[in-house]
Structure formats: C-alpha cells, structure tokens
Image (cartoon, rainbow, N blue to C red; front, side, top):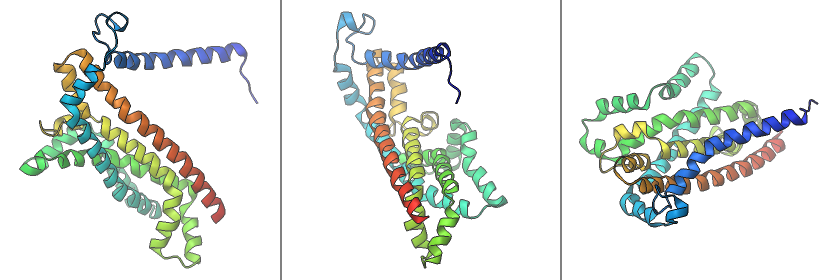
Length: 273
C-alpha cells in the first residue's frame, strides 16, 4: 500500500487547509457583519448586537416561511413523482427510457431564467395562478426533479432491484407489495439523498425564482438580493445568517437519517439474500 512521504502529506494538508480557509473565511466575515453594530468600524470597536437579526425578522419573516413552504411542497411533489418514475425507468431499460431520462434531466442544462420565461409565456395569462406561490413551485419541481430521479435510480442499479423483486414475487408478493415492502426500504438512502438536494436547492434557488416571483411571493434568496440592494450591509449580512440557521441543522439531520436508514437497508438487503 502506497504511503506518501511526510513532506508530501504535509503539503497536501496545507493546501487543503488553505483552500478550506479561502472558501470559509468570506462566509464567516459575512456572518460577523450581521451581528456587528457598525461593520465599517469593525466588530472589535463597535461591538456585537442582535438588532440586525431582529430587523431582518421584522421585515422578511414572510419570505422565510414562504421559502420553507415551497421547499417542503417541492419535496412532496418530487417524492410522489420522482420515486415511482425512477422505479419505472429502472424496470424498463431501452431507448424510450433513455429519452425520458434526457427529458427529465433537460432543465439542468437550461438556464433558470429561460425556464422561468417559458413558464411565464405559457401560463402567465392565468392571473390567479401567476400570482400564487404555486407558480414558483412548478419551477422548483422542474429544476429539482432530476436530482430525486437520479439519486433513486443510482441506488436501484446498485442493489439489483430486479433480483430482489423476483425473489419477492416467487414468495407470492404482488406488484404493490414488492414496491412497498422490498423496493422502498432498500432505496431509502437514495430517497434521503435526493430529498436533501431537493430541499437545499429549493431554499437557495434564485435565478428561476427571481423571474417567477411577485411582490407577494418573495422567497428567501429574492429577499436577500433586495436587502443587499436597498438596506444596510449589516441587515443584509444578518439575512445571510438565516440561511445558515435553516440549512445547517437540516443538513445534519438528513445526513444522520441517511446513515441510519442506509444501515437498516443494508441489513435488510443482507437478510433478503
């Protein structure tokens, strides 16, 4: 087994640390600005305050709740559509399947502004729908559905779902029972990975949302852009803190759930074999 020399190992660690600092320091400075009395005087001279966080909550609390609402609704739709779609695509390989996969993945290759413009041209004349948060939901589902489908299909391919189904069918299980009792427990790591990506992408999505939103349907990223354009830097930076408050606990929770579910699914697969 190859082991790098101490010098090479030290250089690798140093480069990794420098790159990590390069990425982390701007985020840390932005968060510090959100709790600084006066950013231009610095946190050490002006002191620490929570006033700006309270101001953000007073001005933009509706955008925070709307972002969570849209993200959870997006997750629900992608679960209902994406998991069965991945199952069907995995069961029926062929040219048509590949074509459907490409169509599902197509929104990733198209700029969000172009997708939003297409939705506005097609459905913008429906006034109530255009003004509703459901209009943004459609765009988010189009953008995030490929991540759910791909995540589940990757797990289906790895566990050899066809063999598992054949084994369950030989024991008398019907199609629904096989899907519910065999497939879903074994693809749960892929479902959780897809859910993690769907929720985080939905909460942070800006380009598409910026085109689709109205003054009454501002989401967290749109509100953040507005705050940077029209408010004090401290307020805009405090707004950034809400992203961390929302995303980091969610990431930790879903990753823990993915590890736990993966262990359970692994044991289930071993037992089935």
